[in-house]
Image (cartoon, rainbow, N blue to C red; front, side, top):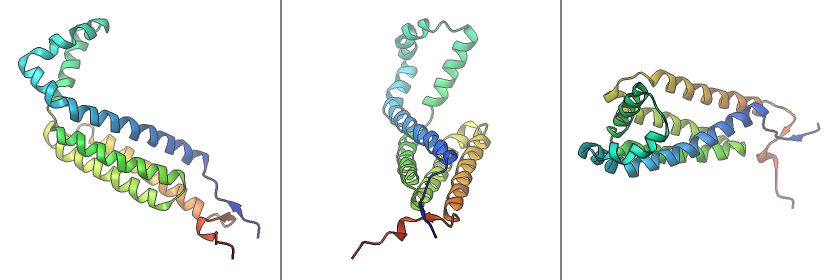
Length: 174
């Protein structure tokens, strides 16, 4: 029987690129928020934050309603315990490791990715949804389950390909 090397499906590659970009952006965003949240929260309490951000906000030409929504969102983000941002950064590093292993078609990548994503949801439930309501939980849960399920289906498809040469099929030549 003719064996071909394992080829990653195009759809899986698209999912992996999306997961890779998301993990990288979330790592930097979470680390940035972990570092800046205590300082920005204190500035907001002292009334210095609005003054410090005034030049930037004036360039955005926001309407009054948009400006109010911006401050409400910022206040909600700053009210989250900074440990949430540290935990999510660490978990997204795990997710990134899983994605890199999935790029190499290593099954352990799927497990690392899945566990990291589920723990991210649990951390969000503890730090955000329990204190600020569960408005976005369903969307987060749905996206997480969808990506995990799609990765699982792609890996099953690859495993069931009878013509594909697997990594464990390679033996050192004597």
